[in-house]
Image (cartoon, rainbow, N blue to C red; front, side):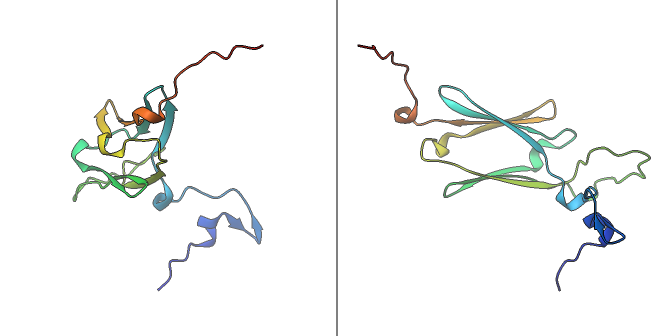
Length: 132
């Protein structure tokens, strides 16, 4: 059996394509990534989640961050709903400059903070070039 979205979910109305509607299964946590002199710093915005239900895995050159809500999680009859506390999976490709064995993470104030250290030899040192 193949999954087939309805026309409304695809954003089609009367034969013309419009902006797609939000599909719950496609929601995912927003991520910001910055680079410091010694690491990549990721902020995964995931308010209302439970720390123990996050999972981070490194396989090969891929970092996967996922969240699975607990069984029996209450699902109220929303009057207005602008974000979901449901599950998500995000996968990121790591390059050769990172030390994937020393990745650290903490969940605080609705943000999963992931620190991916750079290998010592990959850290760039500043050097002034003299112009002759």
